[in-house]
Length: 188
Image (cartoon, rainbow, N blue to C red; front, side, top):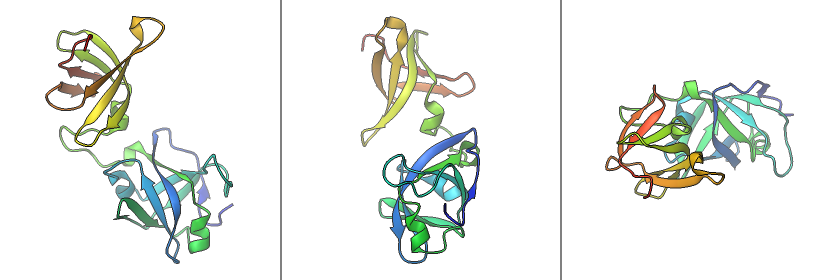
């Protein structure tokens, strides 16, 4: 068990946002691989929840609450420090840990911007009101994001549709109604 972080319950709205990949430096900093190209949630939250990796040596058990003193970008990764992690040896004990942050701690997105986690599960309908399925995942292919929509109504094997998440095809996202309206046909 690590001496600093406290055991904690994972918040009900927790979202996995990254993984600790290694210790960084000698003063207890650690390096994170964020799961988003824009890891604002890692910078805005001062309380992370970590769980051990399911692979490799388990250096701790259960969920721990980790107070964050500072987090900043470093190349294509993020580095952070915590008062609970006093030195490199303690930082090495975090290697492989999954990082979760309460969704309520995420910064408010700008108008017309959405967190992927908020889009998963939304119903997708076209302009004519035809149900195309439900968002199961999102992909980033560089210039644009793509909705992965699964339609279970077509028989035992779900139909998967890939719809670019761009203004040309997405007419609107209604978070209250939990629906995305698109300019897309079922036979595309």
